[in-house]
Amino acid sequence: MNYRANLWALKQAGAEAIIAVNAVGGIHTAMGTGHFCVPHQLIDYTSGREHTYFADDLEQVTHIDFSYPYSEPLRQQLIAALAAEGVGYSSQGVYACTQGPRLETVAEIARLERDGCDIVGMTGMPEAALARELALDYACLALVVNPAAGKSTAVITMAEIEQALHDGMGKVKSTLARVLRG
Image 1: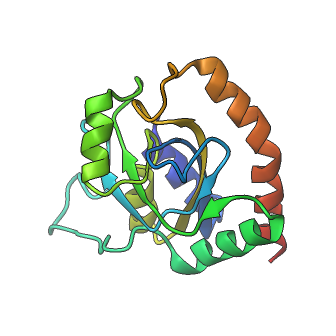
Image 2: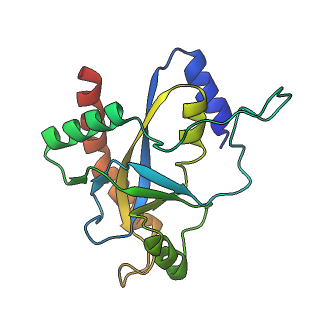
């Protein structure tokens, strides 16, 4: 996925904020299938992705402050919308971004849990950092579509994930509509 091109195009089109909708695995039992999370932090476990606009022909090193990767005002709008929708959600969490495209092993999930992660997905980075480089507010609405590896006795199937996405998309759309209405 060309994250840099996507974010650049949104900025050029006049976007000021981005709400990323991510399908994730739930690491903790409280984050079961169908649960929403509005993460407040993330850990990037990816490699080899084009992750910055500040790489070519720079006169000086450029760094962004990424202490708090998500826009707090945008997060609060999502939290208020989820509360109004009456759906199960967590108002914070740590998003672990893994390389993909495969799902994680049981040992990898155990490590992520020890690292303090609550949900796991493959698309949260470098998008969040690129948005920060472009001065775009950015927040994540994560829908748990499966228990992470080793968190249930069942094998994770694409059919299960697709069903959870199908079941959750109406709630995603109504939540986003509430945010847009302000």
